[in-house]
Image (cartoon, rainbow, N blue to C red):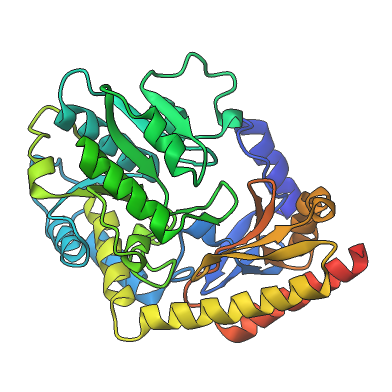
Length: 398
């Protein structure tokens, strides 16, 4: 069957929550995908920052197959080796002492929000997040998300969430009250348009939390696991959160998430307060172990920084060549956004479609940037190929 035939079958049975491209992907290898008709694509979306080791990475595939042959699932009433090994790898390589395993970023954030409330005690339930943020699709994480377009149609949203203007420390300070329990932010906003928060701002949040007895939560679902050139983005800044969430790249495509925190804060969650049937599933956890072992191998994170710098320079040069369409690059490592001018924004969605037609997958984030989140194994030749195609599209527009 062709792409068109499969697309029609899918459109006949799925609820329309996605504007899907009219193709069926059937194969992946490294930074490349192939559709049902045999067309090849350079994947600079990586499942939206998920397949950070690329598609069908040999070490991940081997770990998944080996685990599936021995044990696929047991209740979390029992221990499993992959889950313990993954938790040990995570805690050894960040600030945290304890881990709660979930199935997604939204679930990890739900766990963080529940922990913040129960640890803070009665009457302290409100979480301050930032405009432009994105924290998930459940009702609580939608309420925490600082973008009104995600709220529409789901009102009244759960209480206990207020939003401060992005980058405005005084706005956060003014929202703190006796009911506040935590401040939640992404160190580098992804869906909001690849917007980094300055180290000084993050330190200001840390200081506010310390002064007022609040918990600082970093949502590292998109920024974590090597995406910025360190295992977690907070490690660039020296600003340490109390709670951190991770998902996306953790399983390189298998559904898994994690909420991490310290011993003293974790003690507030006791049996019966929170749980997940599939959280830390042995197969997904085995994939996570393989992912972390690869990312922690010698030179891996340094290579992400080097390729990120190269990609940034190529995009900056492109912006200089087409100043009517692009203003510059923002982001870190291999989480990059090419910021568009007002004229460029009008073409943003069409540019994504034209890149797709030319065999490159990217997306348009925050209605302001072209977002690039390729697998971290991408090479300079593949980066050059993508930038050259984008340059031709810009030239046609101009």
